[in-house]
Length: 372
Image (tube, rainbow, N blue to C red; front, side, top):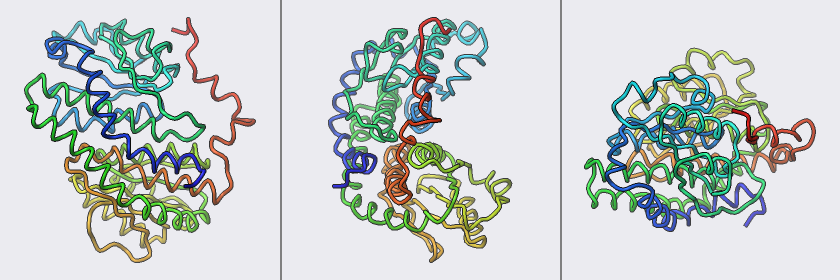
């Protein structure tokens, strides 16, 4: 087993699905009574960095099965750009969930303080019950501690996304959108999805190691995806910056054809296209891929869709999620594995080793009492 921490976490997190579902579901049941859950008709998901991306990644579950209106907001918007009558203009209650595994992300704490001021019931999704986020929130969904290592967030992201999906399942149950049998089926589908990846993870690791040797000749990277796949693209962008520091973008397939298409030196720009079978806009992404081929862009395709892809592109096949809203949970794995191998190939330490000029970054994102 490699000592590269992001690769190790990517390989090991597949064993977390079943125990997490059991543990987190029990904790969710204790947060509110069923009647209290029913009283919420609006949900706001917010967080910083990966914890924000977990919101859009879980949004599909809320839209499909929860029976509540749900928005994923950047903390800067949740703190400074929401109307003062957010809750008073509505006859329905709003639950605001702030996600931060450490519980100390300054932007998330500020957003929860503001959302509470605007009349929302607030919840912290965190590992640290003594953190500022937990202390400022009305309720705490306390996650079991994950392995601590200085690595681009992989296990923490997985734990955040699966927890939010399980909250959506709980809402669906109390609102009568899904039955107990359907809720159990969704949970089993997540476990089956992880089990399917266990059979493929070694091959995916070998593939991404090969792709990294090819991509290291490039200078920049971009991710392309739409819908729920866009959350994965956004996550990939974050991992590239954290793992080896290239300038990287995340774009939707339509805008890519209008904007990113014009980037100079296409052979120096590595592309990662993400396409899941449950995505209704795949035809546009296939046009992107054809254009990438014509331009000579080095390209990796992450997909569970069989197709006639260009021979000179790297196609990483992944298992199919039985429900489309489950896909973002694990389609990240080829990305995290690739980033681990890219860091090794380029001999660049994660987060630049937090040395100058990146040394002060950690302190600048922590919450300090009295900031709001």
